[in-house]
Image (cartoon, one colour):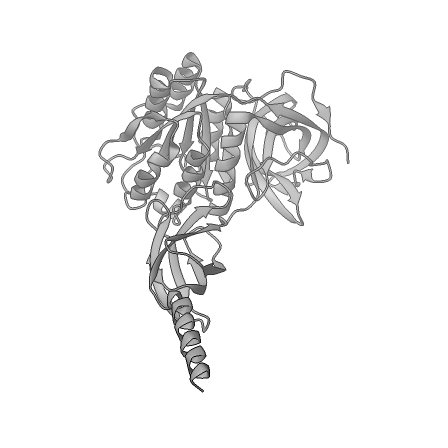
Length: 425
């Protein structure tokens, strides 16, 4: 009897020592990063739930993507939510003191593309043959290199003039855009109109994607608005840096600093001068996010284009939503050899920012298509706007473009030095 009692006491002691770790409180850290850009996400709501689904802890991640909790050893269910990202639920097991739980969120994205060059090859009073050079990126922002002629088209349509435009594809070639080390001035429109054009602040998420993929290249962040909440009409922070994460706090701050007029041409002119004079390496670019309306009048669009060409600076233009002045963005992009990008929604914007970082740094596959258009009336010379329609993974996505007939200025950058390869189905 005594021997059995001693064994029981011994087992109770062993159990108490072995099980105490399940009752002692420990700290553990949840770290949340962007799945595609691999940068820390600030402001993620993190909920810790027990096996019954009860919320036993909640916090927001800091600027390092960290949220710290206290709990005992065991299994937890973690729910993540953040603006611009798909919600996520993860099951994790805490097995040691000060454990770090690394999780990722997938950005809400859609495939998208941009126009690198648009030029009219020939035209008559009621027809034209024109060429579009473009890129297309999938959900992760990586460049698509397997499009065929059956995937790409321009739909026939009536235009606001009342005339019917009949488009016929004549050829589609695969080409290559050459990237390399670069310095870029990233200029973000903070005027009052942006609050309605980009209500979800997706330009901020997209800019983070761009900056996260910056190294070893260099960038400086600018914002522009007149009479708004930023200190100057054209405001910049810091020096050119290859550490893009250093701008994340400022980008978050800009979410609440919208208002005022739009000194678009002034911003484009001054940022061109800045990257030309201060950009430390490689190709010189301006990446301009705007709705395309200038309300300042300090400079003209011709001033902007001539100044950029004199200095060898390329201006990429990015617009969002139905209020974008595509003609203005097209003229600045085509006139300096840059990309024209108009995103239909905030989800495409995130995609194109990542695609831009890939193209500028490393280059990649682009396409060159030729179309003939017949118009039921004598409307040329003039201009028209429509989109390249790309069928991808069972859905259709659109790459808007603007064409002047005759064309405005022909871009030269972005065109291959080698023979293009015809695309076949």
